[in-house]
Length: 428
Image (cartoon, rainbow, N blue to C red; front, side):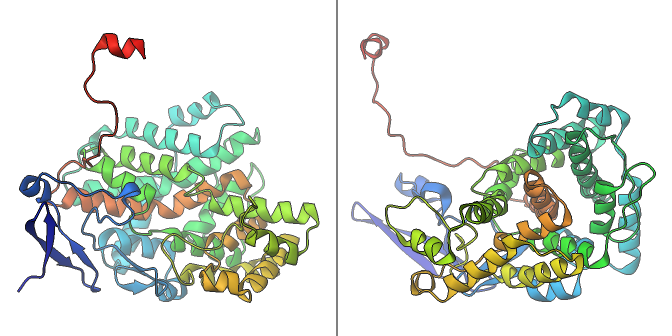
């Protein structure tokens, strides 16, 4: 017998089906509520609204659980790499050896930009924000692939996926070089996805950059940890755009734009700026902690707490270990890392933070890793976008494969003026 919820309004009761997910999550299906009662539900910001049925990612914020296609993030981080994880997220299974080889070959075939796209970089000011360049260039990419506007078969989808995952690295590298006034030079190099990207970023004519294995692995790990995170702002944006049957390039470009917002993808940059501010001010850790707890203080401890996780962010535990390893390997003693460690220790032993479950999240250490690698602060969100691309692609795919799909069209509660005449409105 299917569970049902009873909604009562104006003494009238309406039965709504209850959907139960594979992990026991429950949702009241109110799809027919308006036609049956004349009412809609109100949930400002969609904080308690399920917008889709998905098989991609499971999160339990209370228990600190994150799983891609049923596999725990800690196990994936230990045993997998970014390309294998991306394949899992997008297609729902790990690739065979032959499938992986073929997919990587397809990415290698698409590791260059058309000359016309390369020339477009000259149209951007050197101080253009990298996220503005990224979203523009992904959209521009669609101009070169008219045949992929309508993806009707698996072969076309695989090709579009390979193009996006391969070229997003090159766009990021060229953006970095253009901002520095350097020649747009690409040297893909050897190794995995992250190692190849670092070679693209830091190789110059006559000087090839070869990434240290531990450094490349740390960046690969960051990409894995960011690969998907359920229905966040940017992923929901991708699904919203995809529901209109917009092409994959357009939808993922919209995801980049949503990620750009400082409340979404800019958090690790904000952490680094906060740590830099603490260092420059000379404030003690004790005074910083005290400032956080003052009701009239406008100071916020960035990188602590998460809208979803009401427990420890499982990604933070993984990235903290990687952060220590990278700094040790590079021989860098970063004062910001010590401030970060001291802040974490002080906060986790303070009842104010413990009682409110304000634990460090993934952004707390990721910025320090990228800073140590040599990635400038304004490129941090671009790194996030590279990592999140598989999740956006998977959600676009899931939206388009839904046989019951329809264009997303949320309702609203109108709170403006009632009917009035033009003349009355002119009078004010």
